[in-house]
Amino acid sequence: MTAEPDPAIGDRSREFRHGLVVGKFYPPHAGHHALIEAAAARCAAVTVVVAPSRRESIPLDLRVTWLREAHAATPWVRFVGRYDDHPVDYADPAIWDLHCAVFADALGGAPVDAVFSSEAYGEELARRFDAVAVCVDLDRRAVPVSGTAVRADPAAHWSRLSPPVRAWLVRRVVVVGAESTGTTTMAEALAAHYGTAWVPEYGRELTERKLAGLRGVRPDATVFDVTWDRDDFVEVVREQQAAEDAAARVSGPLLFCDTDARATAIWEERYLGSASEAVRAAARRPALYLLTDHDGVPFADDGLRDGEHLRAWMTGRFRAELAGCGVPVVELRGSHEQRLAVAVAACDALLAAGWSFADPLPARPDDPASTGHLAS
Image (cartoon, rainbow, N blue to C red):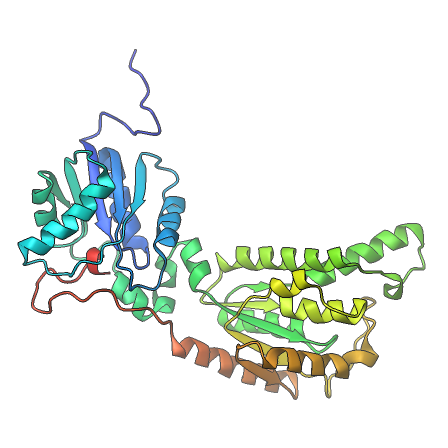
């Protein structure tokens, strides 16, 4: 009887015992994943060395975590992070020695018999480890993407990014405002316009549950009978952020959120007289706030609203709160069509501004192997 291979090691009958993949993964994308999968299919064990320089703007531990999640189905592939701040010059043997010392340290002395790469330098890297060079999609026909291209325009390559990378890159746009000023309508409309996700207001869901519970005892109960305590607002923040984080993984480059922790703090202030430190401390920094003004918007009483008389006060509180948060704020006034046009223009500008990445260490310009995973 033939023993089943240990799933933590991989199939020992595969072509190679131990494969090596090296890269910056800045950020990880579908081309990187295809390379790792190719190594996993042909090796009993694979070590992926994630080796950025410290000047880059995505933390090393995040890249390792993202890669581990993406390749959780192949446990014989392990990911090791090491900083590599040495110059990039593939024509200099001494510099090669410095890079390979970093990779050898990550390997912990384990021998390598195959080096998998999508770059011209793969041959030399394999030679230095006395291993077979395995080239995967060198001309980028199978997966036409690179780290350089992703950094230049993440939105254009969004489909080639894994969920955790999308969640880290997504631009979050938060719509806030007093009761019945169209925050939900605006979040929905923007999500439809951009073909992306939006996050409903958890506080409304909790209000519905509280009111339903009261009516189970008192059928004539109204929203004015609903009571709130500090724990309720902590729950609202926790659940709102959990829903936001889940949506960010499947969203397009923009994610629209109907309220956030700063807005919750104002609602807590309204009902309890002040905002707790726990709620305030949970505030995040989105890319943009859209504030829906109450002026000229009829109050629609849907049975869950009780603050028509407070709308002007709340609009003022939102305006004051957001003014000092360090996030751009665009106020929406006029008809829904006018508000949507202003909001779309602000979001288009956000996308046009792009993303900012620190440049990786430059390679020698005349080096034919100067582009690729080590430099991307």
